[in-house]
Length: 457
Image (cartoon, rainbow, N blue to C red; front, side, top):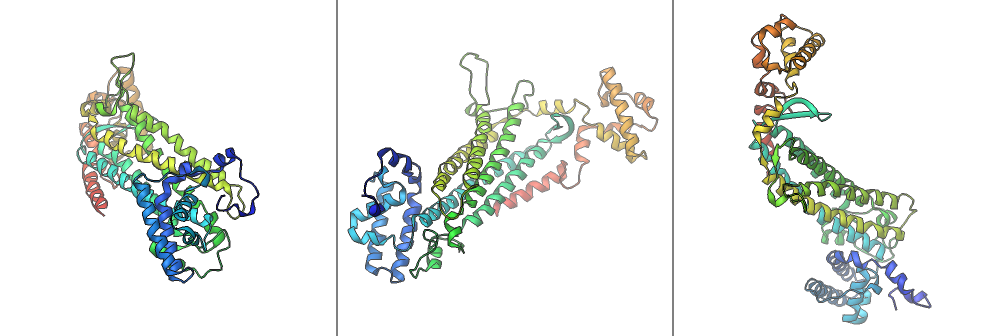
């Protein structure tokens, strides 16, 4: 007989048991479920809702069950449906009627809401630590490449020269925002729902603040119906995870391009590459491609959860059991991708010469040539047109801007002097951009130190 079976005259169909059961995936919340139950039992005893000795026995036995689960001595039963009923069934088997007192003043609805919040909090902390490791790796790469010049692109076309440090630190900013989003999601996850009951709280004199403090939550939910039916924190967390994957995927796309034979800006370490079953020469960026591919998987979990919740009336509905598998898989996916990516980028060999050579192509110093004219008195729109004609001349004569003679410059416009050559050197193009946020060695060096302080905090 199921623990809720008193109203029923026959058992559920065996296939229905399998369809209805969630123990295959929510078993991973055993620690949170038992920890929450221990706090609940302690509160019940403190409040005199159940005898103190019963409370102490329940807490003691729950700790023993937790130890047995962690040591592989417990087998969960699908017929007990979920982790909550499995733990309670095992408790009752061990201490009899005393174990039946544990569920006083609570419902599985607020119990599962508690468990998933506790689990999500722990996973957010774990992922935050992994992002911090990645940020440290990116800042290290930047510190070693403040003067490594490579092309900056718009529309994937040569645009202006930047440094590898500047490029990598753009991703630092993305992942820094990801940490902030996770922190923000954590705040709304860190609210304790236990005591909401099935939807309308309870007539027992519960001390919710006591349980809140015991479990390390910041506050309690203020509406029992919202307490059991809120999954905004799941959606918000999935959204933050999706953005992390998007940023990883963007960087992976560049790594894939950079490591191609056409670019050869970097070479991935053998430990993070694979070969071909038929082409002996191949060295494929499969780790980067897999991370790029897994991004869609996490997106799917976000859209799935939004779809589950979009039509649900208050309060709890069984649809909400679908909140876990996607969230768990998203956590697992992120926790695989972040360390692989961090190690892959940290061990990649940077081909500085190839980057520099590529930066000399495509008239990437054309804007600086126009700026030189402006600084020498020409309106910007006129300067833009002059340099446009200069670039066209270079294309027709198969030359770069720095290969032109001063006579060729003057033939386009007499304002040009020998000073133009210094202005359009790649190093000057980069280091003249000293404005905050720019690629100059001066600014980037300050930013790297600022990032180091951020990572210490």
